[in-house]
Image (cartoon, rainbow, N blue to C red):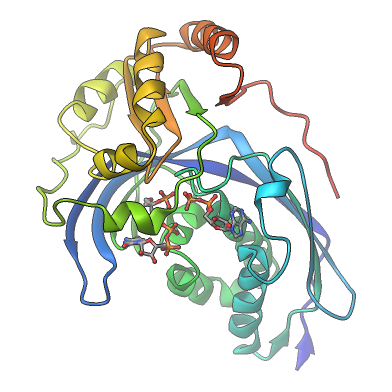
Length: 300
Ligand SMILES: C[C@@](CO)(OP(=O)(O)O)[C@H](O)COP(=O)(O)OP(=O)(O)OC[C@H]1O[C@@H](n2ccc(N)nc2=O)[C@H](O)[C@@H]1O
Ligand SMILES: Nc1ncnc2c1ncn2[C@@H]1O[C@H](COP(=O)(O)OP(=O)(O)O)[C@@H](O)[C@H]1O
């Protein structure tokens, strides 16, 4: 096999937010059919760096949430490297062993797809180096995790199936979104298991001309649900407290993302988001609050 030329590279892994999430059925293998409007918060992110070399894939994890992440074979980044190596090999190319560095800045098991975003960042780097394999990498990415295809697209999207159908949307207006996590890790499978109903109404149609601004989006979100909110809140009651605190701090709209426990607050403008951020940090010092000024990322 011909070695694949992979330059040292780094990429951001932004947080995914399920603005709305309807559970509309269940497959025979137990996975749930979803309809979700998702977006990404660029200022809340991990960073993945890759250098080719060594005898085997390795991973080093640093950053504020490093202690919550497995740094061995259970890390989704090592699984993503193996996954990509097989896809690249199908084209007669050998992906070299990778030294992976993860700057873990997103809370873990938090409903904002941190692991999936990390995997997607690595897959983007490999796809850029091996464009011929990129379509196959994207087509199979759901086997790494249901959130990986949407994170690979990395743009506002309507997601369906179990996460494998991703319809990219025209850019949403600038959305001042604050993410707040109360420091409780929530296991996604437990939340799905605790669902009372698996066959709920579909997402309403999106307005044909998109959303003019955050106010218009908040009005549309008012007609939607996160069907995982109730079971997630039973498991992590702090979700209700965070949601109330964001509303009291002036959010136009606040709702848990995915299976929680991160709650997003949608604000009318950046000044109101900043005021809320400072107020929440002062009132709840143990909560993680996303920081638009958080640009100091370590590099490998
Ligand atoms: C709920 C969502 C919404 O975007 O996000 P998170 O809260 O995890 O961020 C996703 O569907 C999660 O995606 P992800 O965390 O990648 O899921 P996976 O690793 O594939 O699956 C973890 C477990 O969740 C359940 N699961 C996941 C996705 C889905 N459509 N139906 C399911 O029932 C299954 O029990 C599965 O074993
Ligand atoms: N790179 C990674 N980042 C975060 N979690 C990871 C990673 N690799 C493996 N995991 C495991 O994946 C699980 C889900 O984490 P995460 O993707 O942050 O949450 P969620 O599915 O709620 O969006 C965690 O329990 C963690 O042990």
